[in-house]
Amino acid sequence: MINQAGHAQYGINIMSNILDGKVLAQKIKDSLKEEVSILKEKTGKVPRMVNLIIGDQHGACAYAKSQKKVAEYIGIDYELATFSKDIPCAEVKEALIKLNKDPSVNGIMIHKPVPDQIDYPVLANCVDVTKDLEGINIVNIGKMMLGHTHIIPCTPAAVMEHIKSTSVDLKGKEAVVVGHSNIVGKPLSLLLLKEHATVTVCHVATSEAGKLINHVQRADILVVAVGRASLIKGEWIKKGAIVIDVGINHVDNKIVGDVEFDKASEQAGFITPVPGGVGPVTVVMLMQNGIESFKRQNSL
Ligand code: NAD
Image (cartoon, rainbow, N blue to C red; front, side, top):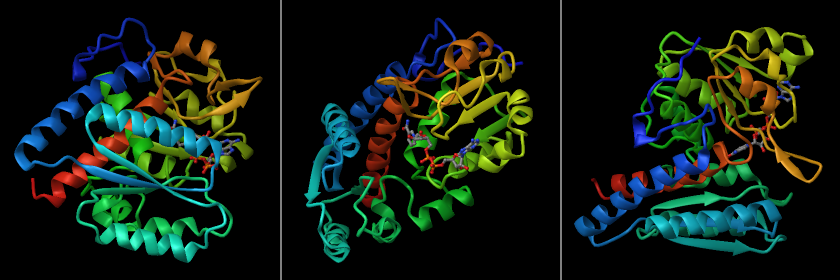
């Protein structure tokens, strides 16, 4: 069982077992804001990011809006490059190559979803390795695999920030990740391994084999990134576990996670709510990656 420990990092005093993403995000934003102001004093410049959005998909627009707000708060120069929904993939690639070559651009990301004619993996791998804000480029994933990490994919990074905020030492703990996507589950499993947790990755076939409950029940740290409301039953949670719910589901006009929150929070040592858990920290991790890219490009 994991006890509620101190929460030294970022000086957060957690009064309950709820890991409040807005509070954590604010603390990190404040520390990044200070870092950007120091970088500006040193170099006369601030990090600049250009994010691409293709079409007018509602979710992507909302995310871009929240990125802009956070970037402005921190002092990062944020630009949204918009493309019509029927633009050929080759034209976006051309624009991307220009941004890669532009020394004033420190970071680039491509909003998802993209229209059908756009080959997202091709474009994502076309982003310069040093400007890859989301850390999803093949080379950056490879570096992470080897532990040579400076750019970490944003959602897994946000999950790790939440876990770190509990001050619980992961060494030798049972970490169970549910979901094995390239953007969340797989990179997260590498980050947990780096902290010497014993990592189990579950996915749809684990459920189909009727074994999900067995893995979840023994998790000291449980991270769920599936996209199925109430997949994880509250009574499965080990007493005192850290539960990080990445899932986003729309149910009866409400947003809920993948974990049955009310019941799970009676069992968990720490738990993230949905909304207001992982999401607010994810956008801040993108900014952190932008600052990291700026520093590397300026040999700082
Ligand atoms: P994905 O669709 O790429 O992958 C889903 C994963 O869930 C797969 O590994 C699949 O095998 C597994 N899965 C499906 N059904 C399952 C079942 N019944 N039992 C066990 N595993 C099952 O999803 P993704 O892009 O990784 O996103 C997962 C969820 O996280 C979604 O709800 C998404 O909206 C959310 N998300 C949130 C953030 C954030 O910042 N808060 C960021 C990214 C994704």
